[in-house]
Image (cartoon, rainbow, N blue to C red; front, top):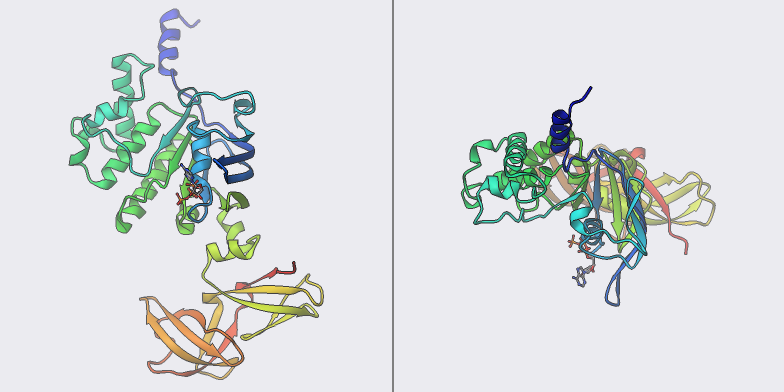
Length: 365
Ligand SMILES: Nc1ncnc2c1ncn2[C@@H]1O[C@H](COP(=O)(O)OP(=O)(O)OP(=O)(O)O)[C@@H](O)[C@H]1O
């Protein structure tokens, strides 16, 4: 039999504790004044998953996050945490009652508070002793316990990021929202902090929605990626889905460097300046855009493809970026080849295309 004391202790330990939840956006619309921002976004982050919101600047990623956090209101649509509606035509739970944590890109630590006080800032529902214990546990999780009495200015960018993560996780939110959480870090630090953050999110079993404009970052972090453009969802899926089966030329261009050619399908083949390519499933006369990934172009000095001339080369270490002009092609094309594959000064080459790096999209209409 559970005695009263144990029950109280459990209740205290579970105060503010929420297990990973499902966050669902249903037909979300939003406008800043007359300026529409989101057009019917339907999307869900599943319990425990890291969902990346990816898109170019101005595509509406931050606005979607702010709506989830409760600091921006949608003009139409509904928002659910598990089965509970937290915002909709008649509901609008205030941010502090949503069980959703928000981590900003500038970390937003209070400069006049110690690291410990920064982390326990949001733990107002707990007694002082419990808040301290929870904050120390959160700092321990991110390996920053020894800095508890320091002030933010004495910490590096990566350390501040870890404290900000501890602060966001300390109240154990059901969902953690992160807006470009690594953008303030230099590129060398970014990789390690990102990997650490992912490990901490996994350990905390948090559902996380992470905003980024960097496709590689989304691929490194996201269990799934939601690609946005002009306030609408373009595609949702795993990194493999979006890379191998992009829904549009826009999605293809976001995940790979590509050359794009226009063509007309005849007998399930489209002609391009780098040779005929297969266009299975497209009927005769269909106008298509053919995307060819840069590493999918084979460039050799042996004449075995379409003749081309090298007009520029840039050494990138393991690879080399080669710009070529092909007979009949209006624009120069780019290829990424293994460095050293072409002799220095090579000019006349042959180009052929690897089938798996070709993507065909209809452009009719
Ligand atoms: N407070 C605001 N008032 C008016 N318009 C805004 C406001 N905030 C954002 N916008 C506009 O809404 C659109 C979506 O902005 P949002 O910040 O959500 O995009 P984003 O994808 O997060 O972009 P970024 O990657 O540049 O942060 C943009 O056109 C932006 O200019």
